[in-house]
Length: 507
View 1 (cartoon, rainbow, N blue to C red):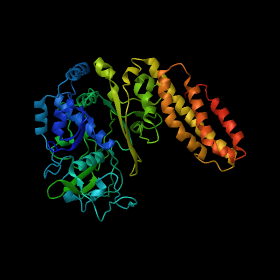
View 2: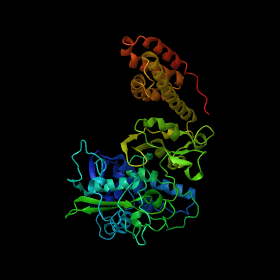
View 3: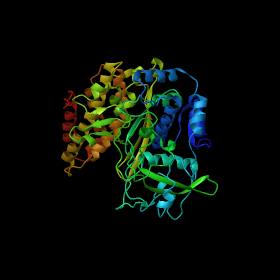
View 4: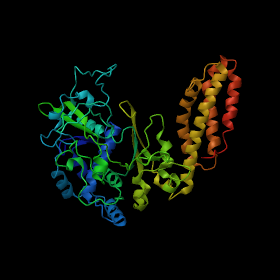
């Protein structure tokens, strides 16, 4: 994978290419961004590439003082050339990057071939294909006629399993000494989450912005390892090591063990072994690219949880969490804090900070095995609006987001009640009127949100109340002719929405 084309990228010229890992690192200053078709794969690969860049730039030293580290990163950001070619060559030459290496296959455990009695089937590797007992309603892929997958695409799916893999049953591993009970897969560390990645003017700048100074305690130098830097995968009986920065935190938290089987010329993966990586629970860790929600009523080990992805929630609704300062986000009225990677952006060079955007990668999944949808989005340059630089705009963003969600909730409840009053039907959640009104509301709410952010004059709650009334009138227009009680019910609902102009108190 270091030399064979395996990672799709979009060059600054607009050209799309498929490059090996070495070329991605050495030509990062010529690349605009990764161009993977799967946002979860892009999310995982950015973490892995960031860990590699930390090694190449020597920004992985845990004993380096914070201010010294920040100055060193700024020195790299102010150069327009690529990473040191000698450092890239040395790093790539020091490790095995072969997907089918007989001794140390990349991101895999070769012992699975001996420890597992059967394979899982190639369909279990490729996201989107039905496998196991799932019905293949509209798919040409079946367990009896498996279609091989190109090796470089198998790499993308391999990365997605390590970060977003399912939980549940898997092949049993025959260990020595044996395990007393049948173990199940644990879900991947990012399963069901949404990630926020700093996005610079090219991939080199983006990966440097992914790094942050070590903020823990007691990490000895040269003890941190990425999976490909280990001589062998960790033994299932051995307790996982502490989550150190950056290698283990960014690339070493997988709970799955996989082994690909190649065809005769290595161009395709034809099958896969899939099992658990460890019999022990994973050590605690906080991902630096996720919003963290804190519930003070939970035990300490379950108090902090990452923001879950929701395909029905527009990405602009996370914007206030990104621009508000930590003391605002974690104050008495809120339980969210922005990703740790944004903590030191004030120390960036001015031109870099001014054009910083955020690339959002998300995978809406349930905790076990159901995958709903993945999605991606790119914000405009938002750091000039941050609390530290423009507190008025940051507060306006928070107010507009809060108003949009308050009126959406009120629109849903009033539409449900009006539907019941008009039709006499049992109250549904949501009703026909609520579904249709909200379908119209959210796309228009995004447009209104950006208008209100630019124009500070209108009251946000009044503006979103007007939008909610318009959407409800449109959704109920036809039914006014068929239900005698629809008119009075709609009038009451409109009155209720218009009354929701007073800014609600937060508790």
